[in-house]
Image (tube, each protein chain N blue to C red):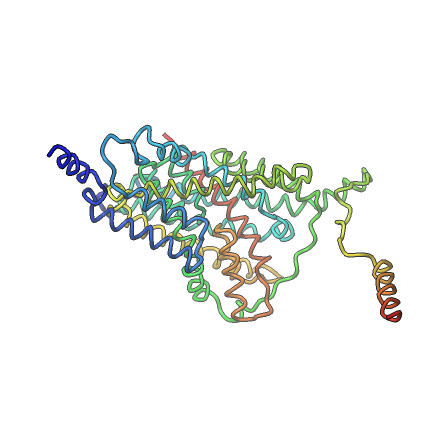
Length: 378
Length: 86
């Protein structure tokens, strides 16, 4: 009789007994993310760990067993520490820096301005979120989704709006995965066929010495203007210096391979695990998703329109499609530019040109995060 | 949980317009300065190289893995000779 009682007590503690509709929905979302990653190949490195994390995070646990990311002392909470304290994003930036070749940007510096123009999405969405009733810190964290840079979005929201971190991270990474779906219609809508056919001059050769001087000088400029960006920009340019200096190949290799992979797994998984239905399925999250999409669209449009504006003054015209790469989803948005450009002219290779605004966008969005953090920090 | 409260006053209270304008201005300034620096860098390096004509191993053309013409000619000759000798 006692053993039957224990059995019933145990059954009450199983996930089946405590499952809510919200948990079931979030588990379905997790499975959807995994399917997107495997079947559609949309950002698999991120969506797969996030999707699995969402499944893990939505298995109901017994109170006091310290299992979820939000319970002090749980293993998941220690992994999530890297997200909630903004440790993982700079480490990812180190890896990105060690991967990035700034040559195309160095060979055509005027394209850097496209990376600045695309940040308009961040600030217009910031205003939009304020209009809806979010406070300044929340609105800034939502706006940064338009930077199309997952680590930057996580970094800023961990500093300004930790309670929105899960929703913002999921929105940022989802939209980054959906770059090939979101951007092309906007790019086509804002450009004529003639503009999409513009061919650009081959970039000049960049010397190794320029590549070495650039990360140090660019860091000084960016960090002195927006000190809030020191952590992100500093790690980005340190990674790049490791790569370009030619004397720390081992460190650069570790940063761009093993280290970034480890951090990506931990970040993706713990962000996914933070999407517990009770904390995630709110009208606030829906608004964040809506505003994130808006931010992304405005950022894309901002880059394209500014490229057209630059063409009014330039003798050698630039293909305005590359403006869309000013959002920093590296290298996906540059690939989308190439894809859209080649639909009009299969012999037009825009990828290398699009990489310039693309990497400038990474710098631009990190600077924006620094500005918003500096202005809104309490 | 946020209560939706659509109001222009929210934007004004949150200093939305000012932050947005200043933010865009600062981003443009930072990236324009970086852009200007990059534009000037080749000229500065040319002057530096002119004043201090130090042989910089980093500015040497990158090593090519493609064999030189003479080597290719020699390989071709050996293969041709081997073909004739069959």
